[in-house]
Length: 276
Image 1 (cartoon, rainbow, N blue to C red):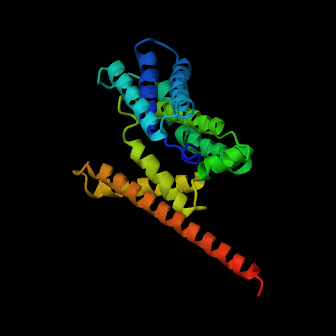
Image 2 (image 1 turned 90 degrees about the vertical axis):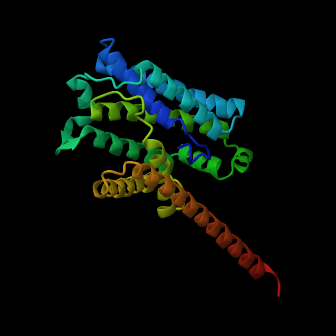
Image 3 (image 1 turned 180 degrees about the vertical axis):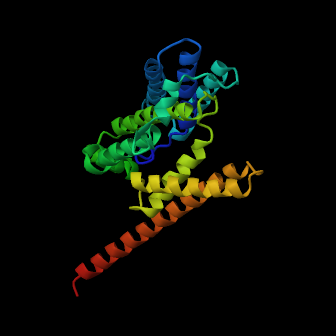
């Protein structure tokens, strides 16, 4: 959502890590119930999203810088709280948050992805919120002049991004069976690569199904690379870094092509309207 609104959220990796450590620490070390710890982790994610929104919308800091800083603080918190070690000993009911088979052998984490994608798709494509987010991202000044509360929707996008990242961090922790202070690190590049790649293949803008399809393609490719070259772990980062550069480049080329075509149509319309 932040990308749709013309903002960047680079704190998602930090939010995932902080939520992962918060939930696992509260369950293992403090004896909290799984669902109470989940709520606490989401509160941490919510605070991070609100802080991002305040820094970007109210203070006026560039979203790239603000969210990068917030993410670094959250990563530091996760490292401090865990002592740089994995938090193991998660109970089965915690791990069931991700591993439990819900229907037809499908694990819960897959169901979460489908439900989240459907909700975000509906909001973006079929509600005024989606249209306002798109207008804000396309041209915030024009949207503001048209009466759109651009700050409000940018804030909403950043808070939503934080909550989704926080939940993803808990689910990832449940899936691997341990809390890790670097839970979100491997997902930052891949998330942006998928979003930009998806925008070039579907509709020419950021969208849910394009992103989901890009995630599947990228993960399939990187899994193939890992199987073929098991000893080269650095290829993962190289692959996603290259994919991000290529995806952003393709997005920019598509944007320029769209602008050129729009300009050509305007000139043709003007020429046709000129009296002979």
